Image 1 (cartoon, rainbow, N blue to C red):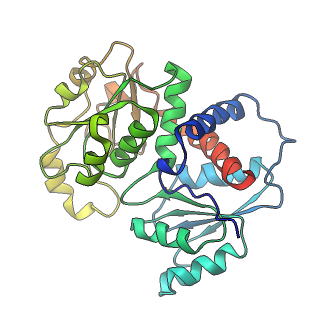
Image 2: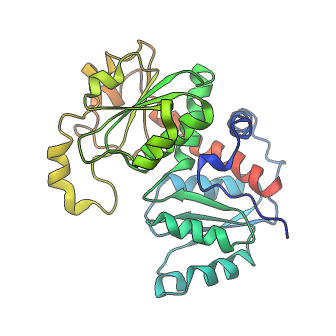
Amino acid sequence: MKQPRHFISLHDLSSDELRAVIGRATELKKHRDPDYQPLKGKVLAMIFEKSSTRTRISFEAGMAHFGGTALFLSPRDTQLGRGEPLADSAKVISSMVDCIMLRTFAHETVTTIAQYSKVPVINGLTDYSHPCQVLADMQTFFELRGDIAGKTVTWIGAGNNMCHSYIDAAMCLDFTVNVACPVGYEPNAELVAAAGKHVQLFSSPQEAAKNADLVTTDVWVSMGEEQEKQQREHDFRDYQVNQAVMSQAKPDALFMHCLPAHRGEEVTAEVIDGPQSVVFAEAENRLHAQKALLEFLICN
């Protein structure tokens, strides 16, 4: 049996494929044809261990636009939350659907499901990476500024799942990520080593933002980290994206945020609601990028 194509990280697509999916996403956004239903009769199983707004709506709407169906599954509703081995769940679920998307905590959950699945598996977010969001971010940049090759992206905040996927994107699409994070919150060391010249670490947000084409950040306290709230607010107090940071970037630099945002913490209202911010275009592009991805994976 032919092995399905998965989307666990951006590296699951070649650079050419990634650019093709980004271009296709923009095409689908510009020309929505209600009669084009390539996924008619197809079913996407969506497994959510983490709550979601953008991921659920974009995948569900995308399947509806393409004539398919999306099933929402939470651990409360399935045997996944009651200790059924992941391998068994993967074999059963993949025998009944055409694609599986997971939004979960442990990255190993997604890789294990993919190992035993007969259909494509999409990483809708893990604690390690968030490739679907960065795919939409790349689409947004390409639409507004052209190809990102040779450009500089500044990541400010924890070396988290979003940061990891930005580093993956830098390797795939040949740009540089300047990462500014407090000591102890650095991105995965093996990933940084593998990225080589594509990533640079800074302790100062202002230094990292110099001549950047894109500045991006994330909340200081992610899902599952609530008990660290006070400590993180203390550690990240100097890592806010404000006008002083944006003034170091290029005059036409964009600001992105995966949302939801906490104005006054990781970003000021002045920046996120200002003229350089493209956060709502970026959020909408989750729909278009994922439609292009579903088409690529399910329709070959």
